[in-house]
Image 1 (tube, rainbow, N blue to C red):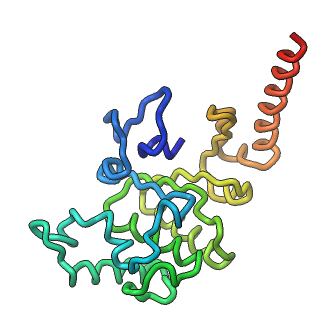
Image 2: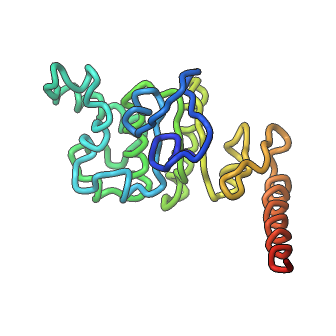
Length: 216
């Protein structure tokens, strides 16, 4: 669903609205300019240029902004200052913005990807499996960053196969089954038995339909 929102998957039905305005032809670049930032689950294949330095990976989505360029000329000093400030805020280890991304651990690579989303004014962050392949310490740091973003007034849509992660971070939870919404849970209803019951109810319904088709 979130890949379709940013134009990476076709939309079969429905409508995307950003602050009440319909988006008819979404693309990652266009949605970024609308204030919607997507972080892919596959950081290596879709998210990062491993052979390039941290600085370039962080700034590549913001080169049209005044702090990064002027009359289409890259402002290197300003770029380095902004990127350095962001990676230090995220506690990148080591905070060396000229080092290639390939030399960093999985958790730090995720921080570099997240840093890219902090270069612009973003109102909605779409996180797709943000803690896959990162250690426990890095997970906690990512969780704290997400909580800080929400506290600042932005919205986060989190997609995760880690049920405890979803239960502990969500204010509103949607159970999805075969690309359809099976349930919407809020408040005290966000708990493991409720999530699993809705999911397996859909699974059982599918099995029943399959048996009927075989019988016919």
